[in-house]
Amino acid sequence: MNLRRIVTLVVLAVVLIGLGVLVASTVNLMPEEASVQAQMVDRLFRLLMGIATVIFVAVEGALVYAVVRFRRRAGDDTDGPAVHGSTTLEAVWTAIPALIVIVIAFVSFRVLAASAVREAEPVVVEVVGRQFTWEFRYPEADVTSTELHLPVDRQVRFEITSDDVIHSLWIPEFRIKQDATPGRVAEMVITPTRLGRFPIRCAELCGAAHAAMTAEVVVESGEEFAAWLEGQRGAGLPVSPGDLGRRLFSQYGCNACHTLADAVAAGVVGPSLDGIGAAAGSFVPGLDARAYLEQSILDPEAFVVEGFPSGVMPPNFGDRLTGEELQALVDYLLSQ
Ligand code: CUA
Image (cartoon, rainbow, N blue to C red; front, side, top):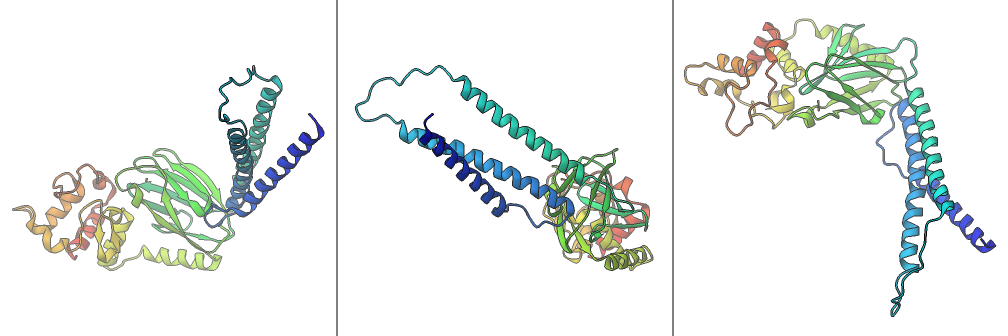
């Protein structure tokens, strides 16, 4: 190799690596960074972006160069030179990717280990996934909520499980995702660093209303969190029937599939329940409104409204709702 070639290669390598560093440090494809773990994941992601940029530009650049430089010229019908492989080339293009993969594996393992480090006295939150709702329990305070509240700058330990099928707890701003599997409890730690409200999604196709299986996490100061917990503890005390029904309606995920203005629900998987109280008595001859609603909740296949698919609504509400809850829910729907 003559000197000019070596200089050209070195210049190209420097330009490529510079481009990789530039892309890694300026292009941001991720949502807001709202946890300690997110910062680690993003550093790893930026490294991968940089490496991918170098490889992409090098490979595509070589391809375009070869297409232009070695294209067939007009009137040239001769064969190209016969090439029989190059041991040096093969050694190099095996060694470089192997090295890259080893580096990425090493860095990934360190990020994985660092993001799972446990601190003393975390906030423990038990997470239960259900078709099609998330439930968050704070065992120390004996509070259950459909909205996740967390104090900022304090580690949280999630204990995640499911009541029916496999779901996946996904909070993009925290860069965490963990399957919720029936019969198993998966643990995951996270330390929120940013105040605000962030979306919670289900990342595992779990049925017809999978896309509607959302919730919100509210990250607040330690005092606000304590006050919220205290308020929720009070919420276990007697409430007005309407409030109770409305709460059950979202706690059991009815809002994911049905529209009901009073509960700020806009689901379209199942029929709208606006005005259901007045109409329910007229659907099936001989069945009054209360009986119709009860039966529709306990046995969703009993009367499937025309135009809506059967087999979509979970058939196990009879096991999940207590007798009082069922009555409260039916009372609430009758008042609509
Ligand atoms: Cu639960 Cu998708």
